[in-house]
Length: 333
Image (cartoon, rainbow, N blue to C red; front, side, top):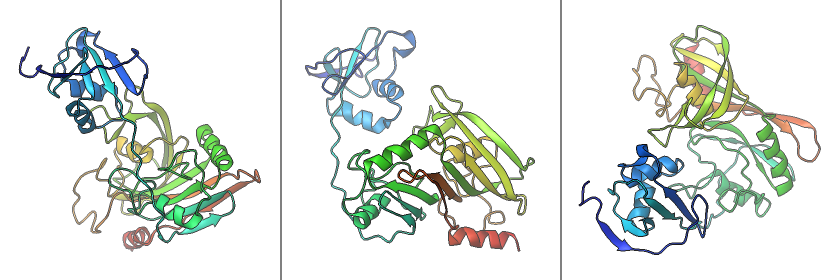
């Protein structure tokens, strides 16, 4: 064993109940041989899949992680019988300020607002994006009329689309509307169709992709198909126009709604979305892609659901962004 790496750097008394939260503490016991001998930051990142490894390393450096009631360094190697405790600091939520950002409003009433989100606009604040988001714009436009179920960081937000995905999203102005829309999302009864341009010739004009989707085991910023503890994901697709066969214009209908679902599924069958730097090729020849793209060519075209007050089905169509229209025009010439 490496004595230098396993050097104890201090003492810290903690109170924790094994396998549960107690005063924001998490406790783990090294009982399996496969977990012994791992760096403590790697072991904890495997247990806390939603956390980045750098965040876990900061907790260790700050003395918020103890092994057998003693703080350790990030290079500490786990041993059989080790009792690891992590004190989870309560999140400090910054003030989210209203900003006068124009919104492309497709529909609005006293319960909901449906907007056509532009490219490069984040839906809700997150580290690195505390301004310029849909939430900042909604706070200015709707004033105090937004649901509070998802907390101060996500007022009104019941679902989201990625930063570089454009198209229709709905926000809720009160908690009752939020609960009813959220229930439809959970039941997968909301209509959500997307349009995209994908790489390579699709031999089948339509099809269904079914898998599980979960956090990528090696890259926590990505999602992956058929991983341990993944959730069921179903995407139906059809070719709208084969274009030049190197690029195809398609429509996808979500049966479920997992993070990055369409991007992961299309890449998984060998047809990544054009411009997707995460799941597609990092570079393409100018012959195939002569445009200067910013992220994936993916648009949330249609959104339909039962209105939370009238109980009538309503559906909205978000026009394609101009860059997408121009690409289709170029490819069909």
